[in-house]
Amino acid sequence: MYNKEEAKILMKEFWEGFDRYTKFYSQKVNQPIKWMYYKTGVKGLELKFDISKKLIQVLIEVNSKSDNRRFEIYVELDNYKAILNDGFAGELKWVDDYMKEEQREVSRILIESREYNFHNRDHWNDLYKFMATNMYKLQSNLIDILPILREKFH
Image (cartoon, rainbow, N blue to C red; front, side, top):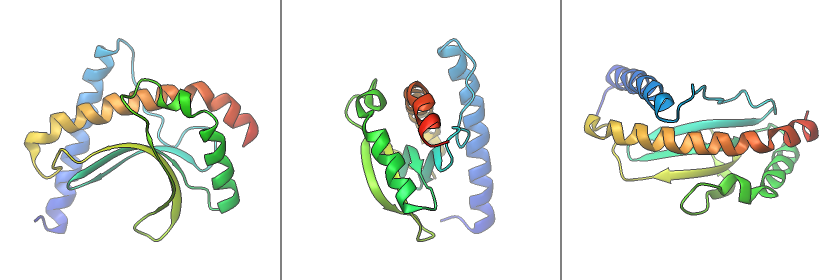
């Protein structure tokens, strides 16, 4: 197990490696990649990575402070489930009431893997591939419906 400082260093090195991998992946898909993250243009709608020791999630998170708005956005996304699922082997996992560590409820649409151990550096390239491939698909699919979401939830 890592102490607090070692865990911080490990996380920093991991994200630096992911940044390098993203540059490689940009060449693979033949276009520059700029991850959108929280810059969706819809308040309370973000793209994220969630990483713990043995779980990696690539996700859309609806985290509006208003439960009503959160559910409205989540339901609207559900109307476009076929578009969001496009390119994935199976359906994405839809969780309408995910409890975060800080005891805040959000909604998530995600793909996850428990195949890798974040603390094992030998797994990092596989983690990077999983993250980049799935975020690229998820972001591309979300971009197709963002104009509708922006207009409805401006």
